[in-house]
Image (cartoon, rainbow, N blue to C red; front, top):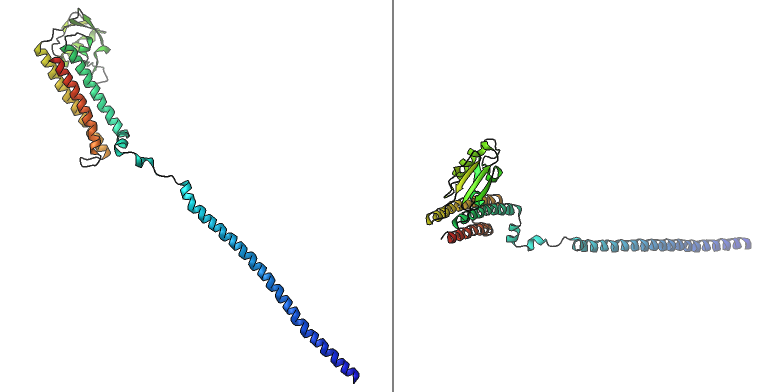
Length: 268
């Protein structure tokens, strides 16, 4: 009986230890799992924070980047429209063509003015263009390309051609130039004499009349260049920038009038 009682107490004690031990072991495992989970949660939470911070930094960089890398305001918007127009390629081309017309008229008037003052110089024959049969330019060549022009005794021009067969073409060209008071006279097979009389009132008036015809030709040419410019740029009379283009034509027209007025004063 004593042995049975002892055995029963032993079994009860072991069962109690087992019951106590199993919960303690289970609790320990649970605690370890919880601690590991907490560490894992903390670890991933920290990474997520870094990732969040990194993403925030990228967003800030993306917000700042356009400001740093931006091109800024274009300087073209700060330039007045009139300055941009006068700097354009088409405007400069038209301006150059008008300037050429102006220089042509100035040279023509210079020769007429010389005649009006009574001075005899080779420049009096500058309007002459000689049309040769084999010439490539249908408008003719300059007189100095086929002959020399000299002054004799201050009252006569002497034209000497380089080749005899061109004499008749030179003589014809002098007639066709219709220079007031200029009448060619043949001296020999290579020389033409042109006596220049002293200018009279009639001669001066004729010189001024010639200039008025030439200035009209110049004005016509300038208007053509101006109209071509307006067409290329797509400008009409109602366009906001029309006044800038019109100022170009007005400027050259004013220069033509000044040259003609000076000649009128010279011719009396």
